[in-house]
Length: 315
Ligand code: RIB
Ligand code: CA
View 1 (cartoon, rainbow, N blue to C red):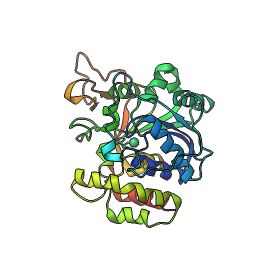
View 2: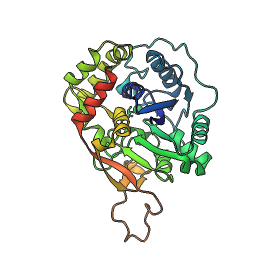
View 3: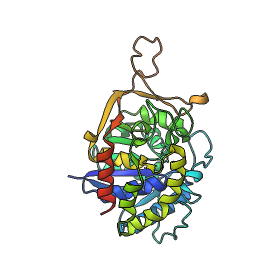
View 4: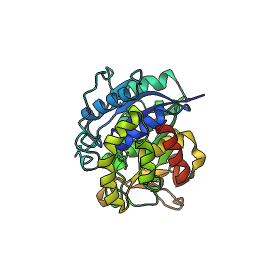
């Protein structure tokens, strides 16, 4: 039986590959895409999502536009130097012919979960504003969510948006903290593992040399992302952040997890840091108290995850 998921996304170059990866995987039934600001503004990201589905010939999947800014701060649009001004590597993607769904992303999420209680996994791969808003509107809905598998955060490693924080969490730490306090199963596929899933030129060539509409599109958009990340990592290639969340969904045996509750710092230079509550029972005031443990990915079988991505995307 395939797993029903909704991908909440800020597409985004690595988001694009993750969407194709999910669409090409028989274990997964994508009920819809919901969009959020992040790598690019929501309006642009929504057009990208529609176009990505057109390229994949999956216009049966609805797209709903979500939040245009964080819950309590402003969107500063800092994703452009990583993903291009259009979120697609400055490739000037042709306009989408299909239209977004009427109604908001949050309404769609709520409806889909209520129609399929206990069956829908949310896969947010952008800032967590839409998911937090869903939980704020209707806190009881958490019990009907099968699981939240999110790409974001950093438990044991450095951030990428600041020394302390990962970009998706740093974009809306208040929202992320609401999500980590939800009463449902949560798995965090963060930089601790996604930076390790590093595709080098040989891996990338296997994708871009394959002949399909999806891989032709990836061939156009990858260079901008690879240029930026090659400088960031000081080696040629790219970290496959968002696709790692999809790989976890398909086969969690490829990852090692530890179980601790998470609190997100919202202040100062650590704003956006995902802190694990390890051995805090002796504290008078324990900020992790009353939170459920999160499955925090800390190790990954890099080779097997990359093989899986290539196998599914180049098919
Ligand atoms: O930190 C990596 C995350 O930030 C990914 O989701 C990427 O798409 C960017 O949004
Ligand atoms: Ca993303």
